Image 1 (cartoon, rainbow, N blue to C red):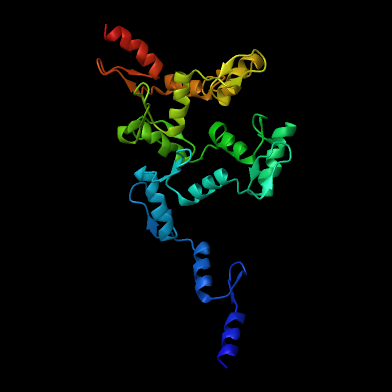
Image 2 (spheres, rainbow, N blue to C red):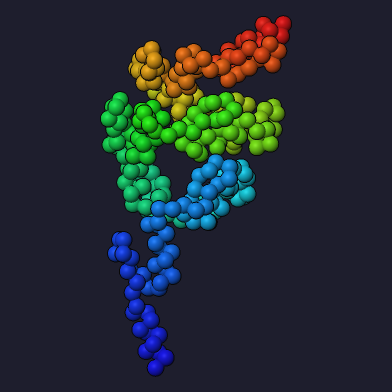
Length: 293
């Protein structure tokens, strides 16, 4: 009798009235129904972002703390998220389900493997409908459009200290570390402080002199592949970043950002001697040589 009751309990099904998904227990159904709820009762006291579930808010608060307590013993990679850390460790253990037959690189899904295959053929199937630039991955296309061709009402995240804006919240969080000394990482060679480990690795190349990325056109070497891409624009004459005020074009987005400050009047870099403001660190540095003389 008890066995029959146990079997019938397993046969019970609980249907979601919104999407028709089926669950074995009512508890599973109620947990699932949260996804259809419109209210977000859990709100962050720092940035007012709200969430449907309490554990989501708990995970989000780690972003504001800046603490990265999960550190890889092999390479020093650090993160605050356990899921990211687990994926990272798999890369060292080479636990991949799919491998590229050409280069042997491993992937966790067939979709990623197929996308990677385009890097060998040279295909870039994802094209921007605004400027025509093509990308290997759809995620790169999306990031490009958000940064370079945002919609007029698109939400941007602005730094309260220097008023620099970003299309992504995590970009702003990373940027904020540049304003807080306690979160910066120190170079053990020259003592310079950097905002994250990636910046530190790039900076340390200045000490080692390594320049592994070479321009195929002129042979000039650079420390990072993105520097090569920007440099190659000097050969093609392409200037993809245009000012929406005066129409002037630039090869680098950072140059466009500085240029726009002449239109807006923003002067985020201030001289500590005369309190005069400047559009960039470079201009401020030139001024300091004269002002402190």
